[in-house]
Image (cartoon, rainbow, N blue to C red; front, side, top):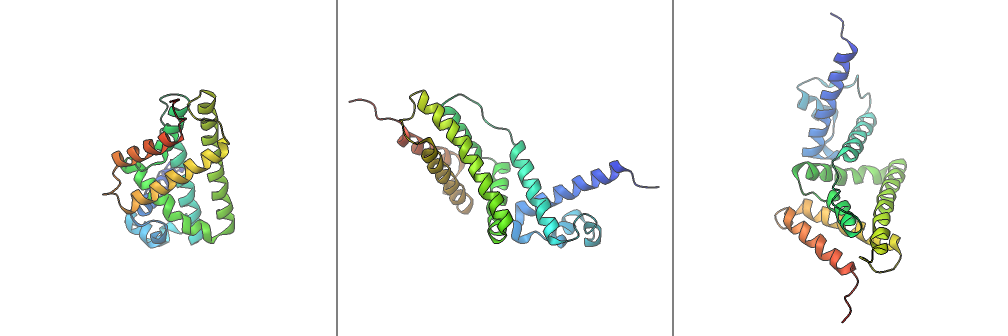
Length: 198
């Protein structure tokens, strides 16, 4: 019986899920056709129909990572400083799913840094993230929740702080459990608030 388009799409979804599981456990360094095939209990020959080269496999993995990141639920608990806090919390590895996603992002940095096109693409992604944070900083400044100043600079520092916290949390999860990450973020945000008049 001939395979239908639905069969092909279902198999492609299975392959994508296997790629994700390999990334979550082994990172980009462990992403090989053999590892994905083992995860699927399939042959590497089957996978070459989807990924004729390692570069095609990596490109697909990066696409999965981007789509999953963009489709993750986001917090929306308020405006101004609350919205900025929400955006930063959304970056942190506070859940198993967010931990997997962050582990994969961090493991992809080596690949991105070694390929100029990918490196430029990542620079654009992080710039877009800073722009979204900048808008929230500016809104908090308008509400008087943050002092005047260059919102781009504040957003850049906030992004750098939270990405550093991501890395430390991934390397030492016992020292940086979710509640500790939230405490540290709140401590950081407190340093940005205007001082109360004496």
